[in-house]
Amino acid sequence: MASREDQEPTGGAFSRRRFLQFGSGAVVAASVYSEVGFNFLSAQEDIANPLLSYPSRDWERIYRDQYAYDDSFTLVCAPNDTHMCRLRAFTRNGVVTRLEQNYDGGDYHDPQGNSSTVHWNPRACAKGFTLHRRVYGPYRSKYPMVRSGWKRWADAGFPSLSDDPSLRTEYHFDTRGDDTFERLTWEEMNTYVAEGLRAIAETYSGEEGKARLVDKDEYPEEMLEFWEESGVRTMKFGSSLPVHGVAGKFSLGRFATMLALLGADVRGVGEDEAAGGREWSEYTWRGDQAPGSPSCTACRAPKSR
Image 1: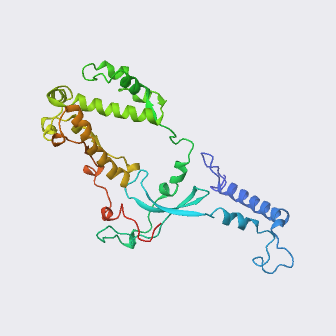
Image 2: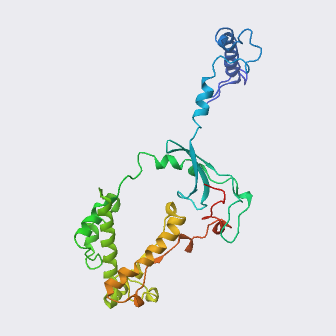
Image 3: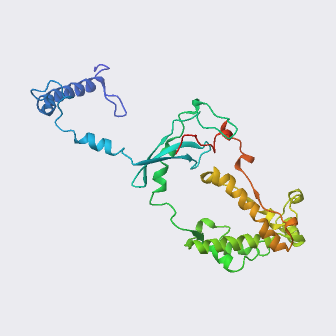
């Protein structure tokens, strides 16, 4: 009778004997190869210290050159995260080649002198350190684009989607993912944006606009408490994470306020009755901002570039 060591286990596993046979063969093969195949690793004669006498050092120049730069600048990184990490970009010939943290957490502060601590170092993550690859990537947006269905809807004069729900399908509002995009010039894009804003202001201003909001769009009455009969007040502007920071938090606010001019023109009222739009923040309903960040997200170090 065969011993337990000789019996072949099921499932294709090695028996103990087969494992020992295989291991012995591998050791023999390695021994033979070491005699013949590893000769190229033998030490060169008459070189006592290879660090003092290198056969080729070209790789050192290449290694150093890949990190060489001619300028740098600091930035706040906000691609799709919330921590607004302060980074330093290194450039060659005007092109960002790499990003690093700026190692100055605890040095920058707000106008009142509030500052975070040095324990905020290190800042940034792998997404932030590779942000420049997205900026220079082949799939980045290089010009304005508009959804074809939306463009046809705008060209038709913005007919009401509430009055005729079939238009949602005609202009791909209920199947946006199946729609295509068309390229625009910057002037065309600005024109379409302006026309769209005016269409909203005209649709939702006055008593007729209120009836449309409440009866057709099913706005709760309490949402109209500060509406002031201005369709502009139904516009809610909020920055997505990529444009947070100064551009997202302040520029949109000023833009929303500026639309009071549009609202006054549409309603035919004076500046005393003008009402602008509103800026909404993600943090209104999502509170995951790190403690202390309000005091340093938009700050700059006194000694920074």
